[in-house]
Length: 124
Ligand SMILES: [Zn+2]
Image 1 (cartoon, rainbow, N blue to C red):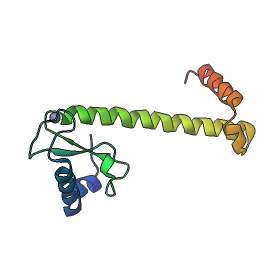
Image 2 (image 1 turned 180 degrees about the vertical axis):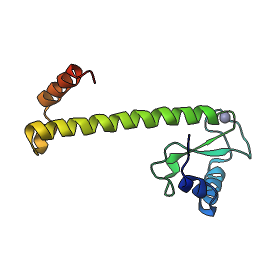
Image 3 (image 1 turned 60 degrees about the vertical axis):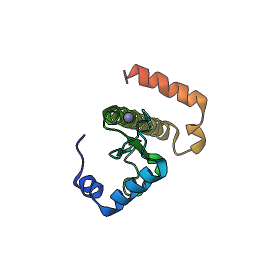
Image 4 (image 1 turned 120 degrees about the vertical axis):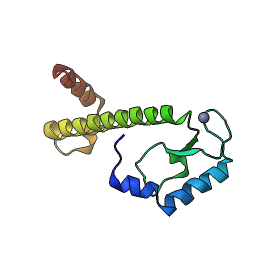
């Protein structure tokens, strides 16, 4: 993963170090994946969506053995979310162009069906 300058600076900041330490103390220095206790756990971001204002649930404590698979899962999850956003945006554009700015059209199952047929015809 290529991290931005913003990320690199944040991850070294006192604010982040204090956040990570507080989470470790609260959760008892135990890897969330394998249950191993360690002083050198990593505070892994499950998502970067709230970087700098993380929710406690955005952070998973992992040992160095479990960290790589956590990174792979996040990459897959990010990709899945991006595809979902792309799909949603495509559907909204489709409905807007064909039915105009009518919020009821977005929730119409017949229109969704039609959109799926249109996608297939375009080899989406
Ligand atoms: Zn572990």
